[in-house]
Length: 151
Image 1: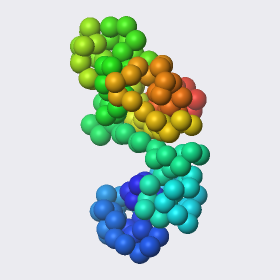
Image 2: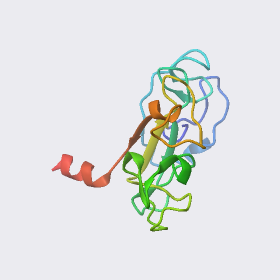
Image 3: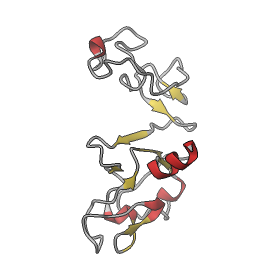
Image 4: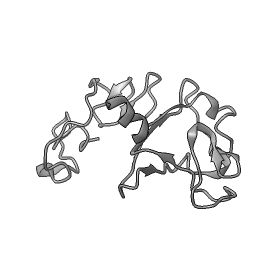
């Protein structure tokens, strides 16, 4: 979060991984978040954990190899994301295994963001459309949608 917020230290004055802007040398502010005074309220905590309206951390995954595909540790799992073969819930696909029998489901786009939603639970042994995962809050960026929106 320190990189996304362009911070070199926490609100408490502790150094972050972004010391001397090492991971954000152009000093780009990628995220604007409301800071809160504790480590449990919705918003950006003093611990630099970004929390949803129910106080649960957002999970943010990035496309780090610039292939416009993002794989998240939770939603990559076959048990969570497989709908039928290589097609998954939430617009995810398994482009590695046409049968979808591997934990390689991914989103087309550069960023995946999700939280466990109002029930504050997620279970990697259950499909995305079954509780407790059914109420998870998910959003993925799709570069094709983004491009057409920019035109």
